[in-house]
Length: 277
Figure 1 (cartoon, rainbow, N blue to C red):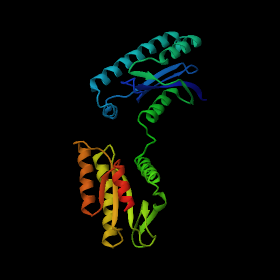
Figure 2: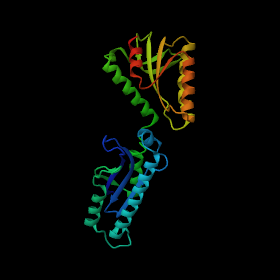
Figure 3: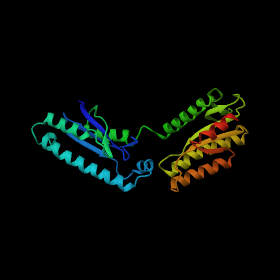
């Protein structure tokens, strides 16, 4: 039987003036299940510190530790009010008042979203599910990320009034072909191709594997003289000197060796200029 759970998202907002924040945790209170729990972002916080690049990572770690300590204190208080199942009953009114006090708006680096309701068969499992959704964004698969890149390019083409010139199409013949999201020119003789490419994988091997698929496809089309003369890849991924960054640069170098144009995703003007050729 499912029980109603109150939950709130923990948001890290180091610069209150801008209103920008990152989701870094979830807290949940299920009165009927007499359960209070939370899950906070641990050591994998580079996404947050990269976004707030002016901020020292030590500030983030200290804020998260303070938040954890406070939530542990709240947990102890709620146990004394009945979430500890050794007590006969829950002080429902008192615990809900404390819940609302915990998540009320404050001008601090760590804040809580408004309280939300969700039904769950297991409150403890639901905390993990909500954390994976709101913090780890498990719904954004690599495939989904590439679709989002395509949506961005489609918007740029629309703003430049070039949408009618490009359409998804299969390039090649019955022997070999590849599907591209943006193709211009006659169906039997495509002239220009734009392909957004996501190389933002967490693992360097997956970056090389995914990029390698497109290198093979381009070479196969080129070998059969089926590759349009103008092909542009708009590539997203790590730009640092890490193993992942090196993997991305390896893919870009090999793509360029095939003769295609490669630009960073986000260089809107370069992509539009190519589209207008």
